[in-house]
Image 1 (tube, helix red, strand yellow):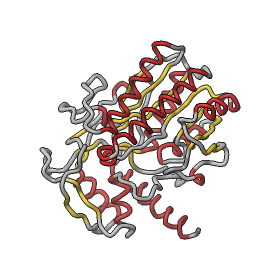
Image 2 (spheres, helix red, strand yellow):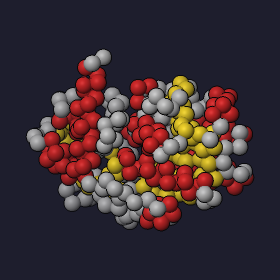
Image 3 (cartoon, one colour):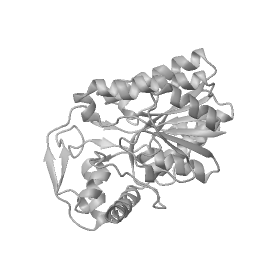
Length: 330
């Protein structure tokens, strides 16, 4: 049996592939390489370059590799872009995932894990937010992910098909062993942008909004190390294979940091100043989103090991330096 990882050449997906291989799984990757890299996929995992919306391709991969589980990362994820290009997000995140789920059902793949997002909650108003909180996404990105959750819910009710939805909070950091990390040019993730700025890859960075109703006026997020996140996926897969039913669970640490607190951490770890400039708010940004992850901890025994902001920043900076050497050697 094999696990199909869609988007496995991307940031979180490549970490997932390594996590599965490290635990003896057979893995096959499907990625159209729009933002991922073939070199990010370990040699032990066959890479097929293609689209998750190509049902015939997906079905042939499932048959060829004897796939019993799909972990789905492929999609678009920039909140501000989703506001200006909503149809792109509904096509890429919702419609293509619908095709992927249909292929899984047709080939009788019993297990499916979906990368959702805390953006489905919007500004929850109560922190930490639980999975039973109202879903009020404030961007097409969040809505496109929520619509996919509904597709999975309704599919599981009609077919022999179980799923786990993991709602991520703010993913950051890189593989502590230095095997992979966030490598996409023009990335918008805060710690990635700060690391690039610290190392001179960007002349400066912007903070979008300092007038939010938070202690220092900047948005608050729950930052989770990418390695802890992919371990949660592996444990969720073990649970599904062991007969666990469908589940929606948050993945976060349960406490948040403001943008300015993150910047203080980056300066501290880097050991120098960074050119930071204030800008106006971005459309679609929620004020504060922090996870209650008790369900993930109790349902599949998730025990985060890397809950330390300076550690997350340190791994991100280490990867950024390695990426510079990798790019200069080409």
